Length: 127
Image 1 (cartoon, rainbow, N blue to C red):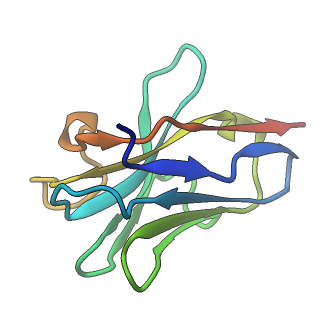
Image 2 (cartoon, one colour):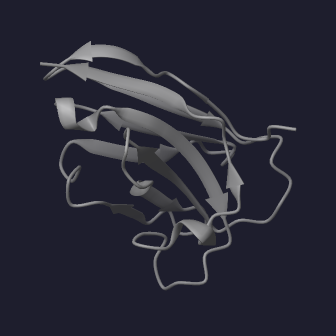
């Protein structure tokens, strides 16, 4: 049973924007972090952005700082990823994740710290 549901992926030209959403209302496990990960063809899954659901602190991979923004709604049941100034290298399957991360920060943190995953949404950026 999928409890994290992503939406908002698609195809866009370089320089464009997309907004991803992750509905987590059905996710019943405890979590202190929610994040967005991505996996490009032939590459390992990497953390892109994460948010501490309690404090609201946000964390970003260096490759997306200044371009991507993660946020959550007031009910803390939906997490968003606003992606601006998209580049072809941002092309990947994007996954929403939730977990009780034992590290000091939600990112960087190992993938295994996140134990709830959505099915993914494809983002394709053309040059």
